[in-house]
Image 1 (cartoon, rainbow, N blue to C red):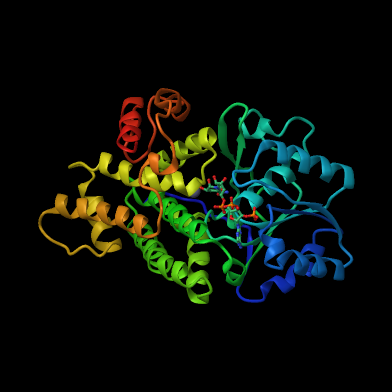
Image 2: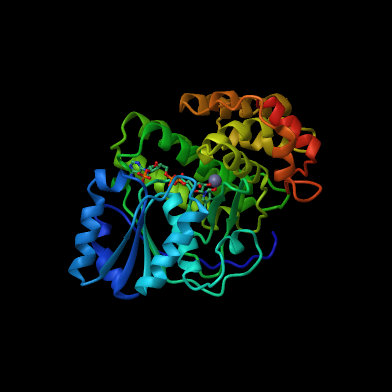
Length: 386
Ligand code: NZQ
Ligand code: ZN
């Protein structure tokens, strides 16, 4: 096992009714809050009114900033940061999914920066700090509620980049599974696929980390089990709670102890999203099974055998390669059962500019820490996914 350092400063309040605490919690960080949210979901579900009442009860001044897009734009970060500066905001509260939370992290950092916030996302400057960030999560998927990451798109340059700083972990996040009852079938499927892929990025690794792999398998099995239950009955509390807890653990450090992030699926998907503005997990759903098929070899067969048997319940046996292949087939079948896409054409991506996409994906000679892939490899995987 490799040496590792672990510190996750986000306080988590998990469970039914925990939202009631938001007023007092925010008050610990100041008297003026930027309330960041998406298009319409939190208003439709009544959460917006509830949060506003709880904040007002504590005499907290609210600066309202709704309209964050799925795949949040750099323009929103600029606008939100201006509001923070103008109204001397003390704390940024995100109420929504990963996009809203990611945007809040960018806004809170840009509020303390005089240049253009794209400087962070293009890795030109390191942030010098951020206003305190907090979140009320409404969609189980990204893990943004308990990590420092923020993924923002610049459609002008066709770039969707992930960035984070030592200041961008939320101070606290409220995770009430009831707030995810209204999540659509498609977004529920997306959440399942995103969380699973976060675990793949650590599970498929050359590091020797026995315990970590068992933790990863536990998270994957839980998500695989509860995904279809939540699809069938969106108000099944246990299903929503396990998906929420599972997706948080998938990317808060717990699934990645002593491991490197593999990277192929996420980096390539972010490029696809920057070109086509697709939902993040739609892209992952297409890429991961094709990537698995491509990298399966005598060198990786033991890991894929473990994956097939321990995660997907394939019967153990002597023919490890056949069992490994069966495991990958189960991934595709499962995604299909969730109505998630398996090919780019399922997303209406026809004749994509593969060379341009590959060029944007690889900034070095290879991509992927588990199996290093060249431009040619990536193009082949994308071609298989057409
Ligand atoms: O905009 P509203 O009206 O809120 O609707 C949203 C949006 O249309 C809706 N939604 C959210 N909660 C809902 C709900 N609808 C009904 N009921 C609710 N309770 O769902 C749609 C998608 O929301 P979004 O926030 O975009 O989804 P998600 O949480 O999957 O976030 C995706 C973004 O996170 C990034 C992705 O790249 C993408 O930009 N990621 C962030 C990561 C991180 N910070 O660590 C890691 C991930 O790998 C990922 O890259
Ligand atoms: Zn992801």
